[in-house]
Length: 185
Image (cartoon, rainbow, N blue to C red; front, top):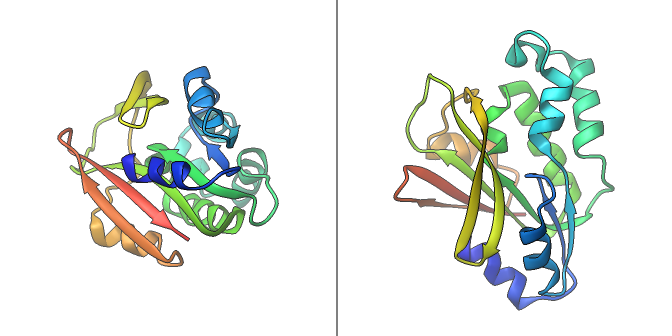
């Protein structure tokens, strides 16, 4: 998070997309630095498009994928200087994940950064998903949103492959067995 925030402090009038949904603390943090924040509740969109029956099986249906991408990431090409994806990508089945990462690549400007979080240990049972709220560059408030089963496990090599179209990928392992990933376009 610290490296993502360093970019916010270096430049002005950036456009940032937050996939955790709107929160006053994140809005204040980003706008006080002179940037614009766009919020979308990615997990809510995920539930709306794929929630009936087996969510992961439903994510393989091309019609549902198209509807989801249209609802969650309907932005023009090169719209954003940064994306806060948080842990949302963990809950996407491989076909939807590939389409989503491709769409994120499209809506990000050259040099833009993406922050995402992945579990460093394989989890077969549901885990707590969170809403993320930035309080300051070193403090993120987490609000539990219920339990979800991660769609797949991501080791470093899998993450490098996932973000292979991007310019760079950096990993940071936290004390909580989470992998913070900073991706640059």
